[in-house]
Image (cartoon, rainbow, N blue to C red; front, top):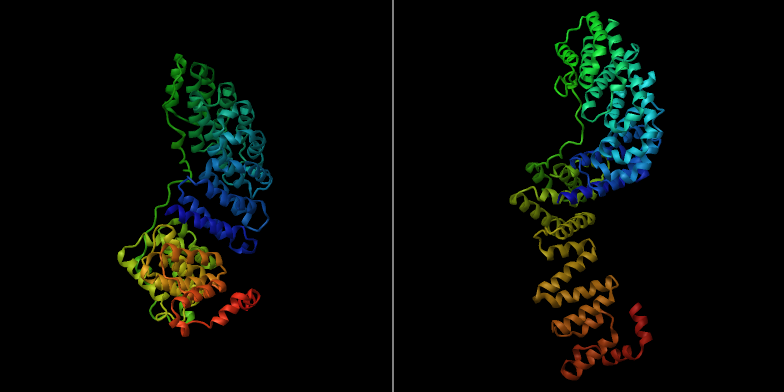
Length: 555
């Protein structure tokens, strides 16, 4: 089912990633794997993660042009999907982060990784926060880091995620944020993000967040200076007033001492805020106000995290499916090879499994992918088509296996079709195809092991043809050098099935002494058949000269 298809896709793609000779396909392999993980709907199984994470970390730590950045970009998505399954890889992830901080091009990826670690693995990340925290502060202070798009917003988002661990270092964080909002040379985007964080943090104080009351004076003074400079934009003024409202709610009557200076700054900036006026009046009346008020979300839309829902299974395009299976007008080896190549790709593209469909693009560039996933993609399509399409498939497989229909079909294609029937049988969906036809196809492509399996089934299940099947089994056992199996089947046939013993069976198995004894026994019982038997003297010579027998047998 779905699990078989997902495992097959992941095994195939990670094999490509682990092959250094296939570096040119690594990018597409990672892209395909990320689609598979997205299909998991944020609930990637541990074995899926184990298959993929190690090679992805190796790429992220390497120096392959373009691939390192791409792998770092994907790791946060893997963290979001895999969650605690990533726990064994924490040392490698921390080492990887250490190499990213001083490189502006890698900083966004490092911040995304830290964010996802704090969301999905906070307990495992806490021991490493002491090493991470100075790097985050540096982003707020350094002009070069501030100018990287989204860096300040991401750092402050991380600060919000680790509020419970932030209290001992709150003064350092707040000082850096206040310096940022007052630095007119800093990017507007960075200053806006900092103002949002101040308002949000002030608003969370009464709900178990960090305690901001000790720093109220620094915050109010900074907000008043911003209002007073006259260069604040409308959006900045809205965010400043939001922060002051949240602080007023938090402090209650303790906020009274700040009211005059804030009022002066508001008048200077021509700001009117009725909600703030109400809260200020309430503070002067001596009561704190919890909750209510406008949320900072009204000032800017928040991004929604990835991980999302699992992608739905697709539907098979019946017309494309039928066309791909058509074997009419295939005569030459090249015709059959083109047919099989197109069939493999079509089954991948039409597979209802998103994990297999994700492999279709890389399969166009690297042929072995489609071959390796042929059985899984067939099984997924087989479950997605009706009885009419199934009849067409069976008819065309039978034609491809038939000597009359396909005298020039390459042996490797017969091997592929026979392996497909074995795969479907192992997964409880055996295809209703004649064993005799499959046996004939196996003989044509010299797949002796498959021939043996079909013959053993024929021997067990079709009593009327057991003698013929037995002789063919002996021949195959000899070809595969399985004398023990030969002896076992012979014993079973004569003792359990009560088949009449034929002296020639011993000869087929090169059991010369037993053959001689059987012929002698028959001759004694039926002397009139002497002319149909080998010369007694010749058989006796074999029986009495073991060395000669061995040499002749080996010859």
